[in-house]
Image 1 (cartoon, helix red, strand yellow):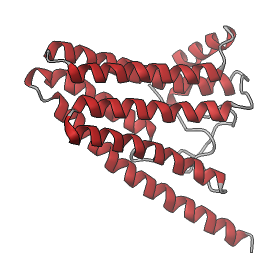
Image 2 (cartoon, rainbow, N blue to C red; image 1 turned 90 degrees about the vertical axis):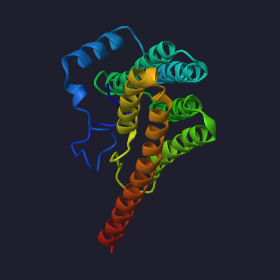
Image 3 (cartoon, rainbow, N blue to C red; image 1 turned 45 degrees about the horizontal axis):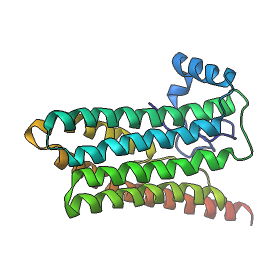
Image 4 (cartoon, one colour; image 1 turned 30 degrees about the vertical axis):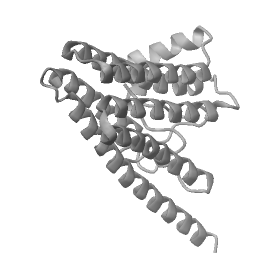
Length: 236
């Protein structure tokens, strides 16, 4: 599945620097166009889809927390799979809200708020829950650290745009990368739960997210700084 696209701007043709919209190949797939069209015809608003993504994240978070309390490997494995469904459903909402808004002309004046703010809640819910599932002081700390770093990564993107730079969706740990990593780690944890390696796998994934977000923040800040310097130079 694919992450969100802002709801009020035309598509970007630059996948690196980005316009106001994240470049996604999945937007051009038949199934995505069909689903977005059906939602638009049914009168479902982009803002409602964005809010529903938080509910999907909450379901994933509940599954992770429940797995943290479970002593049954089979039970934990099933909960990890359920968490993956929640994560991917969140990303599906992130894809469709922008498609309904832009391709079907349903954008609203508050679209930017609903597009971005629910994602921050979703990130915090999911990563904090994974931390509690991983368990122990280290696991919980990594979970909250990943949540904070995910929010900061998005903040730097929004900050860059607000001060006159380009909108940067680059990684290595942009939202789609974070969710892809967490999906893979959860599926691996489901397999390794029978050997009690699942919590270690999740803790390791959180550590990678924290480190990757730090690199992403630095990259985005450096590029935004270059944007502003170049802009100042052209104004002289």
